Image (cartoon, rainbow, N blue to C red):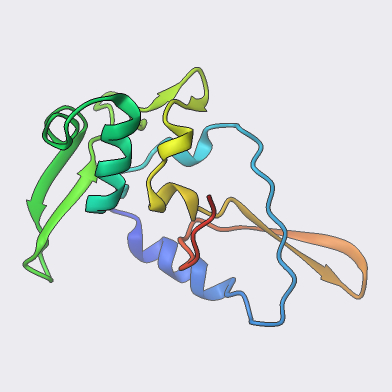
Length: 138
């Protein structure tokens, strides 16, 4: 799993978004959210949607694209998308774009790329975040 999780969590905590904070996000279709990722956990519903979209069975999707293991802390089964080994890229990333955009997993829909805060209406400050929100963005 991700060896930098503590650093990412600290960054997320330092850049927490308050309930009244303004937040803007626009996907740039750069594919960066699909690179260097070992934390793409999927739900049964995600697997169902991907299988339907790819016209495969759920078992085929799991066998071809996923890894299943028991969580260290939870001791519960965990299913994650298995990144390409040589560059940790999501196997669904095709030519810089998501090949399953219409069936993307929840974890991908809530990936946050940047947060823009206005300081007195002047000079936007861009803080890079690599965290997951609890809202679905699909």
